[in-house]
Image 1 (cartoon, rainbow, N blue to C red):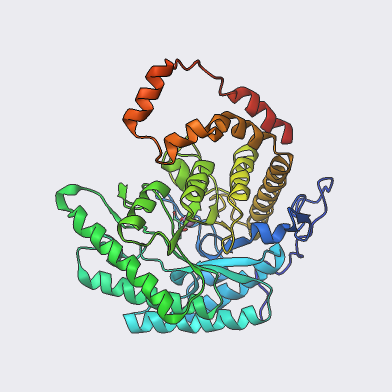
Image 2: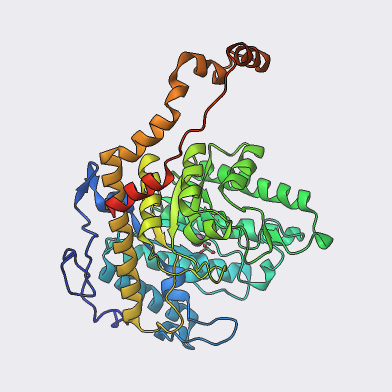
Length: 438
Ligand code: XUL
Ligand code: CO
């Protein structure tokens, strides 16, 4: 194998918080036992092929700033193999347990459906070969049903049935490959599953198409015996003005409508939550409430910009609260934490890519350690339990368990002349408590 752009970098090691080495982990001690199991098994970090190998730094106002050997002209299959070689070298440097990909990240589009599928399977075989001698496993696979112009009016929700059929075919093959590579999950992010204007959109028809598409995916999963999870990734806007998978609550309603709430979970992304007007922890807690917490895409947005900047995470407070809710939900199970984050346009060197991941990994690991302390300590939970404590009294439980009707509740309240007095929510006190763990 030729030397990759990452081959001069040694494998990043845990050196502890005191280390002065910029390319060392300070908090991510993979085999440290926390809450009964190694940190690595809680966090299940993944490197995203899309952002780390396929992005070139271009934006609407400027051309590529990141030039990698596999991005230059040449035989597309040979270039894709070069990219895969570099990917596995990056995985070696970062020493993280998982990676994720879109079909188009790993293999070039061909001149026909047949050729595109052939390219995809050629590279999938190549990845399988590389995985046989590497530690990195597949967290999830997905299909890019949004970049090519054929998807401009949607994939599953396209008014053109040919695009629906093309997308179904692509997803079928992508699920086959994800299964063959031992993927733990299969993700569907509806990049263009939404609309720009109702003037040209039959909303009810598009939702029916999307529901059918997801049912087909779930049926196929069972037919082929894929034991991974099917995950939908909510996002409220960008690229379309109105995305059908707006947020966790919207996705849950959609799953219920199509009877898929026991079959499909969510892959939650930090900045998608923000774009939906939520915090990441809100989305995690909501998914946990409905029993559909699947996996996490880790990144951050810029509240000053308000679009999907996909930056590496840096906010310890928010991440600690997010990890707290992950732990409370019983962990990520088969899911993990995928760095759906890209380096900035000016960070074009291979070393920038490594710094970005080292910082992201350490931020999340540190947040998890803080959250574990919060859970073990139990003070925050005790405060919440106390706040709801009166619901444990039988006379109050009766209002929730169906024993009392509305008029019975009213009759009782009136006869007792109840007159609730305000109770403090203790928000600042609890904020101060959280600060003590940081
Ligand atoms: C786009 C996004 C995607 C999905 C997979 O905002 O998050 O990378 O995670 O298609
Ligand atoms: Co994502």
